[in-house]
Length: 158
Ligand code: SF4
Picture (cartoon, protein in one colour):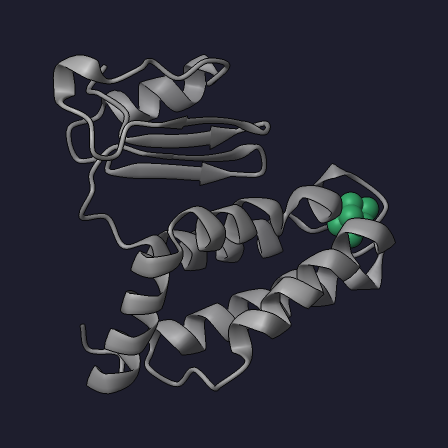
């Protein structure tokens, strides 16, 4: 498999940023299915309920989160409102940000929504849905901020 630049999977973090390729550590605990997906040359990153793995430093963290939340909202069965509505609100907010329509305070609102979902939903999908996004926002804080500001300035065209 191509070398992994960064992974945060089930709480285990492997951070190879700033290292020479020969010094890269191999991440542990990443399931076969995810590793196989990353073997695809065109695959730059994967995000799912258990975490995320970045292979290419140029991947858009923001787009990765938007795509993940779109898929996660579709997986929400609707038995509990915080999951059904919360994942959709998170998706809408991040999609708006990616389209250059983000508002001041959005990132804080996302973090607070994530906390609500963690304690008010009935199964793993709701509990875990926000975690990869919040972790990505935290571990890639500068890149995330840079992308958000870039999208805002370009009206979402970048
Ligand atoms: S948390 Fe689970 S049970 Fe509740 S809506 Fe989401 S998927 Fe359904």
